[in-house]
Image 1: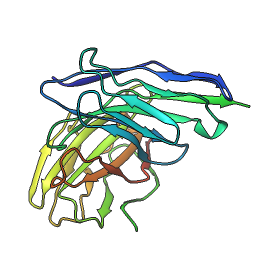
Image 2 (image 1 turned 120 degrees about the vertical axis):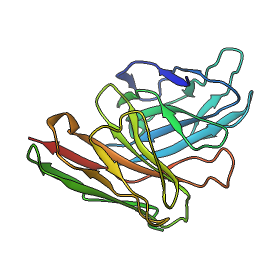
Image 3 (image 1 turned 180 degrees about the vertical axis):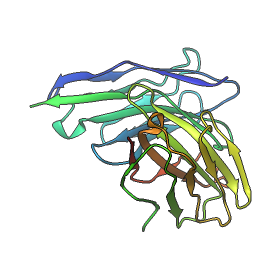
Length: 112
Length: 114
């Protein structure tokens, strides 16, 4: 069945460091891929998404490219800020978006 | 814009008690779902619904019941709470008429069963 494997956390970085959080998936067909972010005490909110191969999603300086050949959707940011501290979830949606499957989440902590 | 509203935000139950977690959305979304979030396990789907009168089981349905009498509301019922149900619960909705759309989440309900 469909599944998402996400980089184990926690990840701790200094401000302005480069960030990569790895995400790979297993799916039949052509799923949509998402990154969600959860700030402390809040629900999940969509960070970015990509709906087909080679699409790049981007938002708030974060980027992720839908790589079908490597079944990956790694999250990157060139220069992180303290305000980026949160839990990040990679997720996969089927073509009808009737179900979304989440990875286990990666806790990111940024120190000034 | 209210979006997805969950109540209560926090709840402590004794083993064997019952309760209902409320979820309401004002976006006219057909699809609604309940997840539980446990440390190191991400979000696991409990139940979902693709429209009023239609519900189905997700990955971890045991111990939970749902119903969908209206498009707006999707309550989750714990009939006899167990300590294993201590978790954070999230309700989500999405618009099935828009291809590849994302899910919108509520703020969560933190449930502790003692």
